[in-house]
Image 1 (cartoon, rainbow, N blue to C red):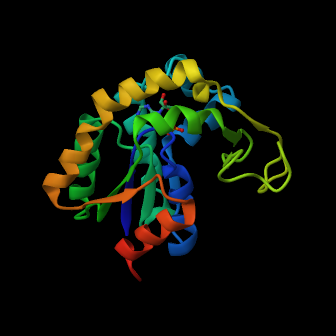
Image 2: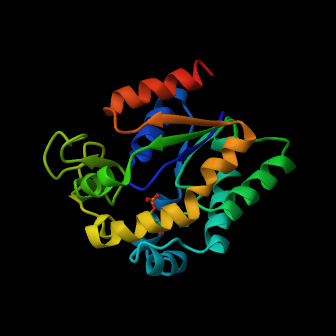
Length: 215
Ligand code: AMP
């Protein structure tokens, strides 16, 4: 099963993607996490990506598409995957489609986690991330067991630079201009499913699990 998560930054699609990955035993692939891992390791890709990420802009398609296609070609992706944060532009979606077609495959579901802009800025300022393992929490909605400490790996949690309020507004503008058109793109293909992302996390996941069924 191949799934794409759509939704504004801060809509909770990362959390839902991880829950899907756990339930269905498929990898959770986040291009944001791949970039952050590269930044942490000081790679050339990481240094290039950081220039855009720190401003709330998208990393250019040439860089992003390559890392994603390399990742989904790996062995653990044979049984499917859930993509979180990719595609973010129509050209990215088209490249993904073409490369899947070559393998006689396709995306099964595009799940849009819908949350109005008003809720997003508030949510993102409460978000806390573990830069070591990529887990995300929220001070109100998904608090870690111990404040400031990652449940998964025990490292410190931080407010990511790109979750700071001044950057969030840019990210929302970029989302509406470049990513939202994907909702129509997948709607036209007949694989778009929409869930109400303002509901509590478990309820949102309940709606998603209903869509995906026992696949
Ligand atoms: P995320 O963790 O998905 O919110 O991504 C954090 C940042 O990484 C984004 O604001 C972009 O700068 C960059 N990024 C992640 N995925 C993509 C993508 N598919 N295309 C372009 N930039 C991306």
